[in-house]
Length: 265
Image (cartoon, rainbow, N blue to C red; front, side):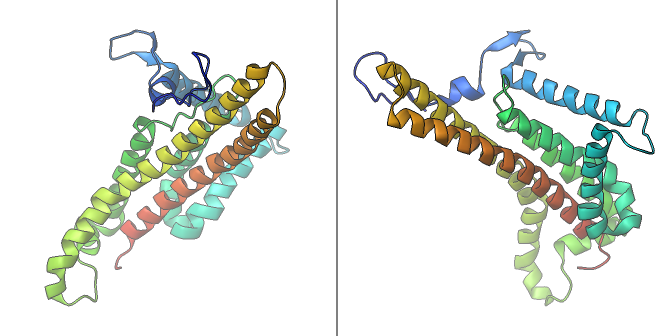
């Protein structure tokens, strides 16, 4: 994305630059496989905070829970009862609950860094992290299908849906192959990444415009106030998107596992 000048001279407003925002220079270990830039650092911080919060909240669970323990238990109960057990049942749900919890909270904390002061970019705004989550889900639903239904039943249900006249399988089976084993992980990754990428660019645009309009006249202007309000409004929207996308990712993961373990479609 190239800069868009809105004023004469070299001090005109420039729209957010994709390269600068999402491909920042290395902070440490430049040129090695261990290179760490701002986005990688944000991901590491999100993982560290997530692990630390769960460790503090659950290392010594109490009968009368602390506030932090209560919040964590509410989150776990929401995923367990509202998503996993509701769709998979308790017997099968228990087997895959740890993974789905990891997906939900992992995606959530990576998303929340986008509206966290001093971090200000989502760990899921680049394809690498969403693709990692999607590939893990891909492996999980294939594993679940083979384990629960058996390899033959799983692939038969996935590629040869019941109740279809056999000549139609010539057309239907390739479509099901692409949909189940290619479209699912790709759509999971792209949906998550694009939502967070666009949100980040909108936030940067609003607050950059505010700084420009205020700095241009060295005073607050109507446009400056409007863009500032837009920035705060988009922050609230991004907070809701962060939670919603974590919920959708966990819900779709559970749905794919549910389809995999079914004895017959």
